[in-house]
Image 1 (spheres, rainbow, N blue to C red):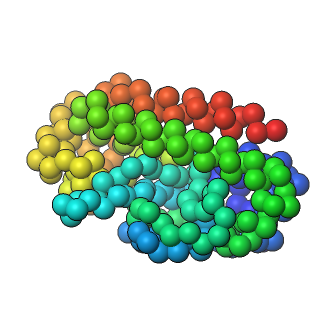
Image 2: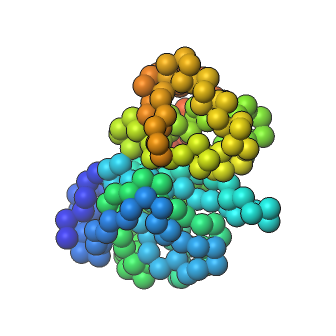
Amino acid sequence: MALNNDNALLERLEARDRDALSSAVEEVRFESGAVLYEPGSNIDYCYFPTGSAICSYFVEMDEGVAVETILIGREGALGGVVSHGNLPAFARSNVLHGGVFQRIALRDLDRLKRDNPAVAHLMNRYSDCVMAQVFQSIACNAVHTIEQRAAKWLVAAVARMGRPSVTMTQEQLASMMGVGRSYASRVLQRFKRDGLLRTRRGGIEVLDRDGLANRACACNDHVDAHFERVLGGLY
């Protein structure tokens, strides 16, 4: 099948390299809340979110809290990007906003990486960008305030989705950030008071993305700049 071009990572490939992938991919749809990987399960497929689909990796703590590590949307991919073979997943991967994904079996992706250096090069470069996200997330969680982190996450989510509404409750946002619901609620109330967003049952709508970005830390900007430096020079 023809590749869906609404994935920025695949768009980095030239037409001949995208054609090499097209015969091995299939299009699948997942609803919000779907689980792509559980910790310890074999990673059989690599997924490329398209359009407004976004996912997160969650690390499940002994205290029973699942804390988000990184957010992935149409700029990237999940699962088996660099590794060869069906290795077990370390973190849980949840679909936060449903949509269409391009899916390729790892055995086919491994074959394509062996036969097509440009595909292997793309995956290796993207893995460096994923590590940059992880490093930045660790530093952000250690240093920045809950308000800065919440604003950063919401800005990143709407940027990936291409729409201002995020399907998420305050409880889910608090759990993802590893904070109590009361902390998250107070932050959202401040954002609402300042006209930056509004909440509805099961969702958050960003009204002033630029204003919200001004309340966020600069972590998104650092990661975006690294993506451009690393992937912009693919060829």
